[in-house]
Length: 162
Image (tube, rainbow, N blue to C red; front, top):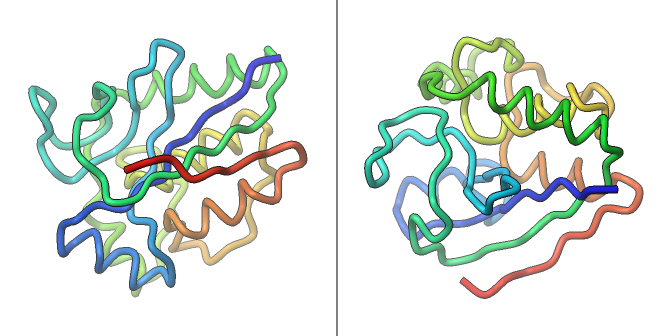
């Protein structure tokens, strides 16, 4: 059985610290780790040759102040569903409305645009790794997602060097 891997991080930038503070933790971003080692996620900034939005980026595309790796057991079918969902999201824009969604009511499952943690949470729901999450409909932060995946039977989260 394959494992689904997510990399949770904190960045040095002020905006990253604000996300961590607002979500009551130190995490500010999450990427899926693809089979080829690329990191897949939604970002509000341009990184290397990739524009804003949902893309695969090379490992080490930024220096992070903190990193943690989550491994979640998955069946072959769940792993395939997870990968297929992520692949279908490639190129979608970053969801600037989600930032306001922390204050205003917003459905985080809308698939027209994403922030990092919502993209990963939805992929895990689609694959059946986590049940439909019972959280505020307008807020899935990296901290909330880390808490949700840490409760998955067989999941392991460990700190990595920055």
